[in-house]
Length: 38
Image (cartoon, rainbow, N blue to C red; front, side, top):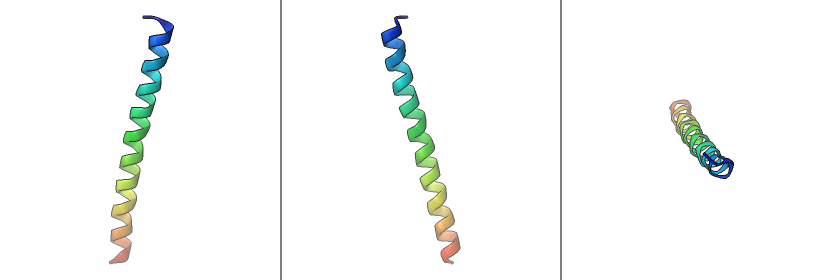
């Protein structure tokens, strides 16, 4: 595997993982927000 392709893969992988974490974080905050409104 070339170092260039490896760099592109890690960059894409990191963005994908951070995007997943961000979605989960937003969803959890929305759920907690609805719970506190009750």
